[in-house]
Image 1 (spheres, rainbow, N blue to C red):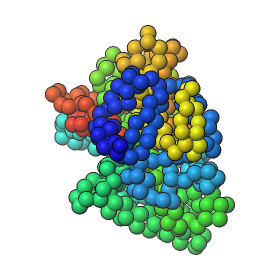
Image 2: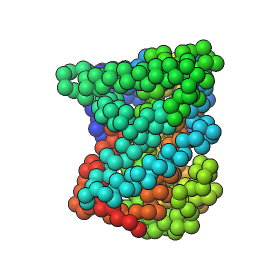
Image 3: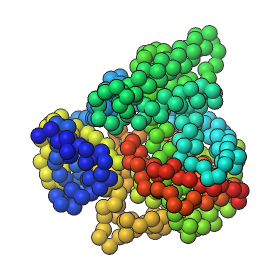
Image 4: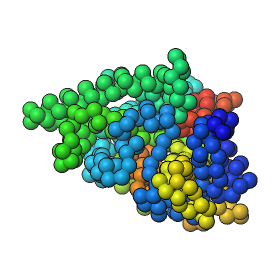
Length: 427
């Protein structure tokens, strides 16, 4: 069977996995576009998967694989994947985050002013998406506002095709994404060539993290201007943009829909300062100094994780939660279903951040994936979200526009359908 009907249900139905887990248990099989696929949820099955080592490898649907590119870190496996991951990981080390923090704080303040200057009601989601893209494009690539704007339009088009059906019919999301990818790679190669020229002349690189990347690439014997590196940057832009923008939108929506939890968080935020002290932004609002904020972020990502799941492929037969899985099967870890799966006595469908402070949550939390392929940009995303949350909520009050559609589009990441219309004002 080709699995066309199952594929359409998977793409359109946010309850696709949950309804089948309820029928078949924590491990079930299906077919999606001709690919035999196994869905899993829960701590036992997921831990069994992570313990498989070389018996599994990374995998993505055709549309994602082709739009990311054959050289992308996401499409690599084994020693090659590990070596390049170490190189790219330098962009997200604690020393790099400390360097990026002043630019992120400045972008938060710029966003606040933009919201105040805009006509009400304004759609918050597009503003948050541009903010998230500006953060990753400026911190990693060192791009100025003009260059960021040029990239942003094509990047939005590219993202819209990532999880589409991979048929390049004229005018389809996938066809438009392929064209946008070509333009994006040309621009990224130009950025790298400019950086390479500067490095050859002994001049400093742009204000972003390319010098960190260049050092690791030199050690690995890879040239900074290589097309390979452009594909890694394309992946990093996506990983640091789409999912972070989704988390920011879901965070503000959740708090605006739950005013008592917002007031509870606001009590804590009234006791911290903005902007953070020089050199302390990385830890100023962490779980130790802002535990309520940490609990809210965990609860938002539990109920609306930025990625609904991730994939692996079996290279040989394995066993997951006592279920035999043959070789050449795609295993889809359902993050959404796992986040809402736990003790029957726990209200896992309810927004209750306090559960994370009390330590009584039974759900398995994997908002950034897990195992050796956990999201590289996790630390940057968490820092960005914390800085935006504190910088915005301490300075602005947002009121939801009534009678708007707040249900989620789920592809490629959750986002309110009407763009989250709000009326902003100073607190």
